[in-house]
Length: 453
Image (cartoon, rainbow, N blue to C red; front, top):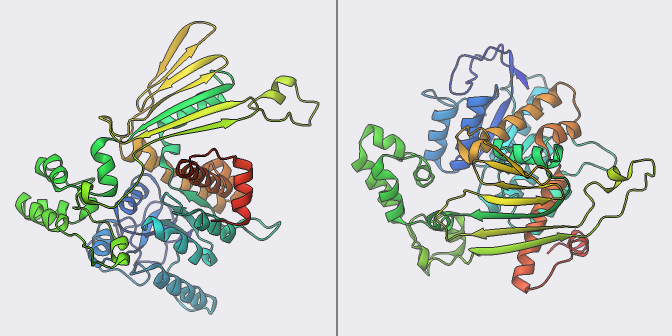
């Protein structure tokens, strides 16, 4: 965190007037795409932090992002605009060296949001590790188990040392009001007693699933642009289309959209070029994606051994240690789009939920209570704002003297170990699907931890 007094060139959230406080956090966004813009908007809207710099290889996207979130109609000052993360790294190492020498230099960065393409997360995270910046990486952490474990080993502090920086992952739904209420009811309030079984369904949506991998001109133009909606997902294709509607009208915007959607690759296109970028207009039926579109994952837990502490009451020794089953169903071909639903079965009751309500049925009274969590709007049911708020709050807690471990647990709500294991669980499920076998977690984890695939 840096004092902005005496820094007249500092642009705070697109405004050259500093906020009421004398101190703010300066944040870097790496990747000025949809997620980078979403987090930048959340930072600006709900925190006292500011977006101070951007890394983006596409010049027009970098300029548009900077104009919207950083320097508005002015020009970026030194240290605010970079083509790639190695350029930022070189600059920041130089800046720190100059500062140590007593030279006058611009302000530094306190935290970073990594919003690059999925396959670039690992190299970016490990490459910037030496700066000890508080880091939030968009999901997934990496696209291979090997990269996940490499990140884990790189970020681990030396033995018996404490971490110097926070690390968060873009699991935004952890922070939505709906899911925070659900977690409170189940784990903190214990309204249904001990958990016995969970079933959760993720209905992706028939067109949304196609959009996630390949795109269709008809969907984008007819479903969104002609109705005047140039936000998500239109801005994912070209962030300037929204501005074109306002300055030149729908005809120009449609022309730009069609130009972008006409871009395609052929059998002669180098593979690295194909994998470097998304191809928004390629027909879903002609694509080479083989992502599973209907998957059921079953996870079971055996009884855990009782803790050795004989002085705890038996009910406390037994809590949370009974056998459990969880079933996760992801299905693409659905009318509902991301309106998740499920049930949690317990010893004292049952919970039913969707994306708007949570219903608790009590076995003892045969009565049901329905909760309607706050619907704040915004990305992922308020999860984008929630994650951003918790990340900045964790940074503030560390600045005020709280240990990184405590701030990680209290404000972010998960550890680096939790993040790695949650990703590893997905790779284990995929291996079970491909090999048509059952994975024993303990043995699988130990084997891969020692020799990652």
